[in-house]
Amino acid sequence: MKKQILDGCTAAAHVAFALSDVATIYPITPIASMGETAQKWGLAGRRNLMGQALEVKELESELGAAGAVHGAAAAGALATTFTASQGLMLMIPNMYKISGELLPVVFHVGCRSLATHALSIFGDHQDVMACRATGFTMLASASVQETMDLALVAHLAAIEGSLPVLHFFDGWRTSSEMDTIDVIDYEDMRPLVNWDKVNEFRRKAMNPEHPGQRGSAQNPDVYFQNREASNRFYDAFPAIVQSCMDKVANLTGRSYHLVDYYGAPDADRVIVAIESAAEVVSETVDYLNREKGYKTGVIKIHLYRPFPVEAFRKSLPDSVKTIAVLDRTKEPGAQHEPLCEDVMSALYNTSRSSDIRIIGGRYGLSSKEFDPAMVKAVFDEMAKDNPKNPFTVGINDDVTNLSLDVTDNIETDVASQTFQSILYAIGNDGTVGGTKQVAEIIGNSPGLYAQAYFSYSAKKSGGYTISQLRIGRQPVISAYGINGADYVGCHKASYVNRFSMLDKIKEGGTFVLNSPWTPKQMCERLPLDMRRTIAEKKLKFYNIDADSIAAQCGLGTRINMPMQTVFLYLTNIILFDESLGALKEQIKKTYIHEGGDVV
Image (cartoon, rainbow, N blue to C red; front, side, top):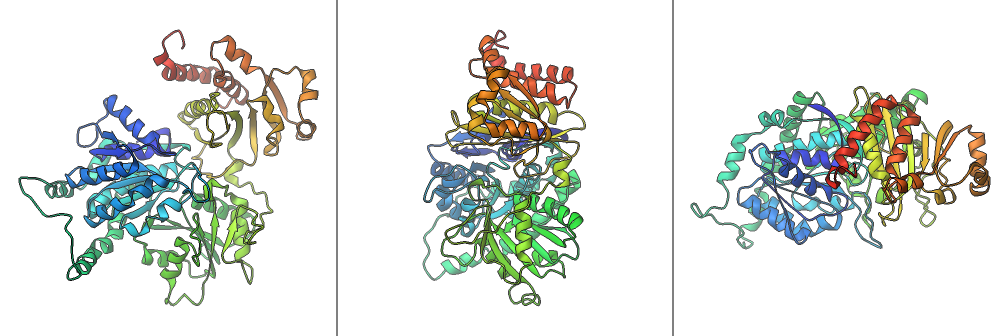
């Protein structure tokens, strides 16, 4: 294994490439890069565990991709696809057939909102929750590191258990977030694969030399019986997943279970969550238990289907009085959302069902922020005699009045021990790409870890972008927006009138503005409240005319190189001479296809 900074899509593609013969795709935000990345690796000479390049086929739509992945698996190929949102919805009819035929297909999904009253390209769980009845098993990852580790578990378990797996992770928060992680080598994966099961699967493939019957139509006399006959595969699957998790743990030293409990052993309040929200809750639990004297915990669900009832029951501390289940989806008209219903069912008619109060809430639809202050609001609501049930958190619901009040501003120890920066820019000015390059330089340096996350308007090119970069001496796990930045960059001068960008900067922090304004003009162009904040927070304020520098260098509107250089110089996290040399290497790697003169 080697330490490297990657985004969630690349982490999942790394494993999918190793353990698949074919990937049938149709690009969709936020996982469009996965197929392209796999193709580039194949052209560069990378080979999978079967000794060949992953064959990536782009179809005319997600419906075609689903049909093709079904056909490839029926023909004996280890097959995968990458999708999200409405694309996943188009695959549902084929998903029923794939699971019904017990084919070990793996879908990697960067889950995303569905188009309802409006389209949204951002993340939540509405798409994957619509697939619960398809027969696909479902495995959730909460971070970029987990995405790599559990993608491997997904492929191993699909082969071992003869069932398809939908491996999902947060669209945007995890799919595009860059983290410094341990990358698993292909040769280390090889011994974990049950190659006898692979050969058995291939022997069952459609073949004119030994024909078999598939896709028949059945009458009432046998359909029901045959549908129930699949139960044994699903009954056995949780143990198979745990076995595969144990194999990966023995290799990596990172332990996973079907559900993981974190927090006080005598917790009286516990939150149940999936994916990156569980990381936010874990970080907040540490803070509340240590600093506020709370007794709280979190249960992180990894295997969602089949729901691991026994493992869930065993994970609950005996002291728990109230459970809040957080769902990142909405099912209009339902009593509760899916995860909450599953938790209620798991505890129904047990010895503890009368002792534990269960409430459900919604959070994070369309990538709405979910941070430690909101977690505290949920725990505080749980302590009330009559808490809201259901509730929402993260919005101000002045229509149905279900939202919780969020009043605290929390900085956890994890946040205080990292260097944090926020960069405001316009799409296509190079800032997002430049931030990724800085993250690579720092995140791949010995003793340093980086996390880079990007949000932008649906316009993408020409709309606003906000790049957030965290740097620490330990792995950075904070899966929420920065609230206390050490460094804020405004890469477009007009944004001083659009964003309250200094609300989230620490006292004594660094503020860098890209503008053509002279010091005298600053008193006229900068809003009064911004000038007051600069003075009151004792900020170090710098200005650079990066647009003029970019124009002089023939970069057009791309200001990423001068602004990256400013960041590396002012922060000095790595000695500037060293970081400048690394930046020049990044420039060569990124722009060599344009020719030596451009570099």
